[in-house]
Amino acid sequence: MLATRRMKNFKKTSFLSLTLGWIGLIITHIIWSNLRYENASGGDTGVVLFWASFFLLIFYGLFILIPQKRIVKLTKKLNLGLFTFLSGMYALIGFTILIGWGFLMADNFYGVFIDAFVCGLIFGLTFHLIWNKKRNELKQIHLIPILTLPIFFLFIYLFAFPKLLPSFAYNAVPQYVRHDILRNTIPKFNVGDKLSELQKALPGEFEFENCYGSRGASLEKFQYVIEVNCCKIVRIEYGPRQKTGYTMGGKRKPCS
Image (cartoon, rainbow, N blue to C red; front, side):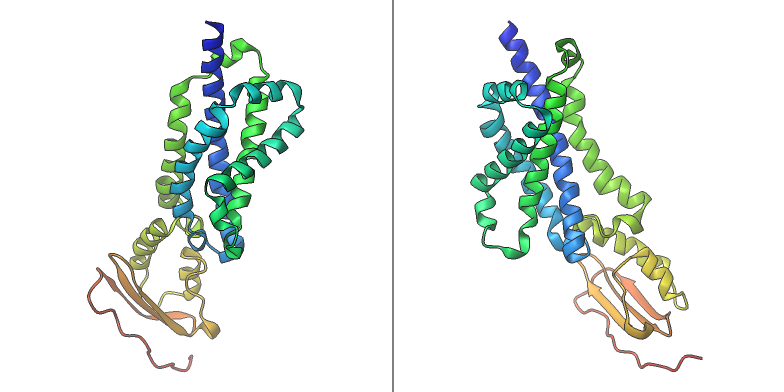
């Protein structure tokens, strides 16, 4: 009976700790992608979001549930700082064994190893803090809120954040969400609007030298073209994607 209760407490505590580690992993990858590529899309955050979830479940079964007795012993034996650091290294090793070996030769994608290490750090910190509490406090941790935490995070990150703060979310979300923001933002502008306002709404997307140039794209369901002259929009066209895109290349006119 006691062993079953401990097993249940371990599952709840470890899964909560790993879930928080997963959230930390995603945030870390967003930061790394922006530092390297200036947006989360450049670092394939959407791909990382999906595959990290898949491989973390495998990691949870192989590297946490199976050696749970050893993990519990180390939690009691080691102090918080050492256990946290070793958890980071443990996650890094586990990630490398499962899938990370495929990235060892990819110099431009080393960020995934940082992600794994941070995930392990957060897991170790959270697990050590919770597990060493009194047993009656562990009983108060309920499974349903833990299971809904990833869903809540995804709702905030992929839906609420882009809807409420699109300009802030633009460089922090996966490519398909980024395209949705672009598609919803461009129709808000008209000929004569200032380029600076467009740049505030979609940071990093429309950078023109000397306030002159054009930019267009054909996305999955949307296409557009915007031409700028004298720091103002002089042409803007958009609509559902067609077989042929819009032409670009308007003549530069002197600023009045």
